[in-house]
Length: 518
Ligand code: FAD
Ligand code: DLZ
Ligand code: SF4
Image 1: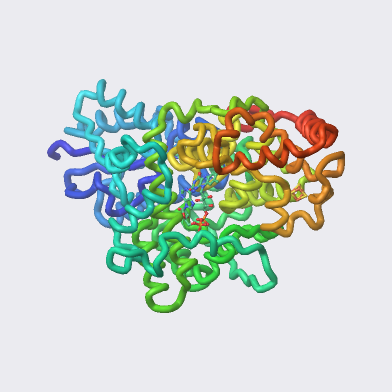
Image 2: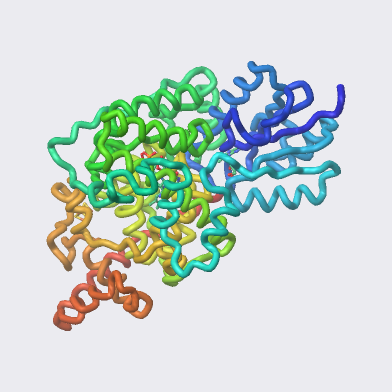
């Protein structure tokens, strides 16, 4: 056989039109998949996340094989498995006497560094191709960012709307406004009638992977009992169809609402499939736009959905590559508190936190406002060390890869980059959670009480955070007025707030680090 080209496909590159396959002929190409310990345990990912990725990899490899591609699939327990991408690519290049290796750029900095180091020592050339599954390339984003004083999603988003033509009316935005965010914030209401998200019964491949995960990763966080994620492009399309037909209509209005025990509401739950490469994000946006153009979904819903994808998702990825590797160490607010153990166990009397952790454990998912305004907000105002919360988010969500997790956690949620990404910290007292959810009614704490043992912990922590960071935040025009309110309080009221906050902080049991690393 003539010398083959080796095409390694990483676990989140499961896309039929992947750039590295483009132009290759099955007869002289070896497609390599690698289940490796370095990826499954560099943090101890949620069991369902590992099951999802390995099952999706196995299904995709089988599909390529059925199409006539020569697939070399290294399984986790293969005795020769070296446990790393670099080790497996080098081994496969030798095994197949490959003339060259072609790979699409990885999503994560860590893996890119490993590939660059590998390229320097491999005896054959290793070509790293741009990942064209995004609307904006990394150089395009870096070019846009260069020289700008403020990097705001809104302006980048408008550019992406113009570039794609999504929801454009000539040169103007459809409906006259770029952003209908104000129409995306209705609190929960009796009028809400969410249709359940489709769940996919694990087939034999997924069941085998689940058994492997239970055996090999028993001490990892989370449960696989309710596993129902789409694991093929076909299933992902079914999930997308159901979203477009049943939930997009109301997605916009209740995007920020939270309801106890209702884990999905009108969210798409498509992030796992998009991030794996099973769904094309731009195609989803075009489908959502068609729902609007054909009168089946309102503009606030469709614009909201499109903004999340060509706005936030693209912007977040650009910010990752702009801010790495510094972002991983960023801690602009000098927060040092260890992550509380209840992020893992859910054992807290805060009803909002307990429900979000439960959903996270059962589903490897929580929706955006639960992530930002409950789980992230608590960590922000309590002063949790960013790297501990970042590891937590990377472990627990099935859609978490560092390129998307890290900017969302460090920059958006914890303001750890000092405001490069967000114009102000997303800090809130219990009042916000009470307005946007039904959590507080049956909570052991009283959201109306500001201080004392029965007060909602978010209330004193909010002021504690504001006071602690006064020097840094007072110059921020978007929040500086809050200090006027603080200054008008009596001395005794202020010290009640601070003492209450200290009591909450002292009561927090630090996490057991073995949740993240053995
Ligand atoms: P929907 O509400 O239906 O939104 C549609 C799509 O928009 C999502 O599928 C996703 O692809 C995209 N999207 C929306 N918001 C964002 C965003 N801020 N960044 C990137 N894409 C976005 N998303 C991840 O994919 N992986 C993560 O690891 C992740 N970590 C997060 C951590 C924090 C602290 C916060 C605040 C947000 C995080 N997000 C992350 C963004 C968002 O919460 C999830 O994309 C969303 O909850 C996924 O559920 P969904 O598919 O139902 O989303
Ligand atoms: C997250 C993950 C896990 C848990 N396991 C694997 C694996 O065994 N093999 C693989 O190819 N990819 C895995 N992944 C996804 C990778 O971590 C991801 O592709 C890289 O970090 C690049 O973003
Ligand atoms: Fe959460 Fe406070 Fe409401 Fe309890 S009262 S659910 S702790 S916001």
